[in-house]
Length: 115
Length: 109
Image: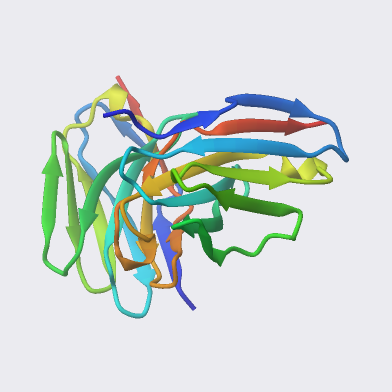
């Protein structure tokens, strides 16, 4: 069974640009969560999608948005990039929403560098 | 406030020197506790899920245990390839899982 895939793996952007990251969950998984990981802040929750609906959102500005498609694939978008957005962005999938104790499986991440 | 705290931040061991990592949590109504291993530049790799106090799970040199307030990840006779960051995580019940800052483990041959 294929794992969680994320594209692209690496990105270099400049301040003010926008970026879209993609995540394909494990087959049959309907919940997708996104996290930002930086050396200073660790893994920070961005949002979780289940059945094409955003179920919860972390403490991030409105520049961070996402969506989920009917095949459970998900995208996240960051507009007006800032230097502080440089991070490893991780996607995780689970069979059902994570708040109830479902195990999440992570993808390899997308490394974003903002110059 | 829901919180997950891991200690120590970093742990340096000699090969074969057993030790434990700690994860203490504060959450209303435990719905599970997860352990992950993360290698530099990669996504976290799932290790264990524990659901109730007293539960234990093992995998090779790793053993995870759970009490009502904390979890331990015991590493027996570690090898250099066990070097990684170990993360614990707790679901909060509101479509959200919070992660600890992790323990960076270094095992020297």
